[in-house]
Length: 339
Image 1: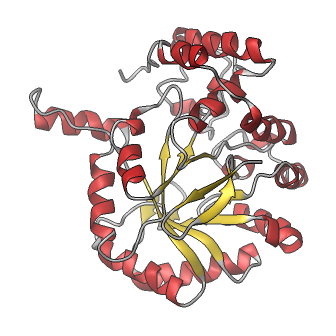
Image 2: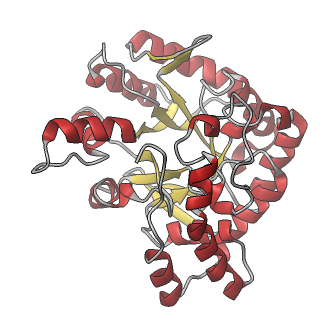
């Protein structure tokens, strides 16, 4: 697989990564299987995928334990990315950016992952009660201690926040989705270099291309494209109105009502049309499109199934033409019940 270099520290990773969250968290728990997920991670590594993206909150903790079972055998082949800063309660998730907690969380992640160093340690969310510079300073100390190679930040721009900010700003000065993230980045860059930013980015959620991706490109910061297949929708394997298990994040997502899934079908149809010309799948076209958006972008499609991990990895071989890119650019924007 093609290698991509991200961050000022010249971190080398496969052009497509693996999001491990669905194996233990947020999606169809009835289909989660530890042994099947282990085979999925191994299959991804076999295909040249190196970046494995997890977090201590996934499970919580069980996703890191699962990844650790693979790292015990294949640490040299993997680039390990995990996160801290969010605590999971029975009915809520809260941020914790206190320096002491961050250091303890790192040590716990190292134990679960069965490694002595984390390649990329990301701040999942900033704690509103703690200046982000203090949290980032504690993370920088982990680099100095040799426990972490590089630091990353997860984007904070939710669409609901954007609408509220836009209403406050007024029509003459509309808010942009990633303004808050860029402000955070500019603050923490004064403390220690940011190597990577993780943000939602896909054919149906391209907003990061407006400001965040260019900001990163101009500063040598990598971008991990989260949810590159639109929570599975862009794969074309979901049926409008199929319903989701109660704990599945899509059960509450404004683009996954039956009405909106049907309304957004033209996007999938367009991806399939391009895919047919290449003997590929809609998902592979969506991932290949992301690879054309910048050499500093690494999609991290999440899956718990070996079949999809293999298909996603093979998308790196697909070369889209100018005609393909023009057709994708002309696809209608995604709609949601909050729009």
